[in-house]
Image (cartoon, rainbow, N blue to C red):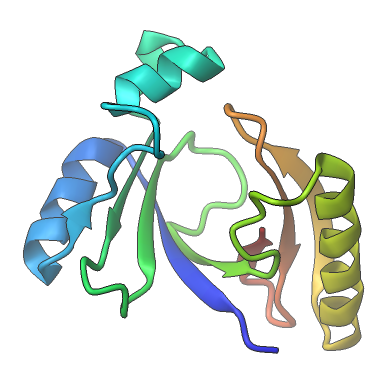
Amino acid sequence: MSHTIQVVFACEDPIRLAEFWAGALGYVIQPPPEGFATWDDFADSVGIPREKRNDLSAAVDPDGKGPRLFFERYDGGQPNQRVHIDVNAVGDGGELSDDQRRVRLAEEKDRLEKLGATYKREATGMAGEIWIEMFDPEGNWFCVQ
């Protein structure tokens, strides 16, 4: 089974960089989830404070062919790689419970370790999403979600 990817940029101003790359590539800023008129409405619903709302942004190919570009505020910590790949191994994950998602991520972790990857940690985002962080055989950081 093949997996789609997203390209992740660690940056100082996620909204500005997403707007730049959307314009440069003919992409659009990703619309808010279904049922929400704006990203602020979504952020309010999951309790993201106003001062954190420029911590993340995304641009998507309106034709659905290119990878999603995701922009996250760089905190200066480790890893210090400014661009990395997220492997979308769980699909959109919307139909999975957190426990089912963890099982699927563990299966993918095991598969990737057999190929030479190294596990770093499981992480949880501001809206409760779960992913794992790993390193490829040469030490390049990537995430599996």
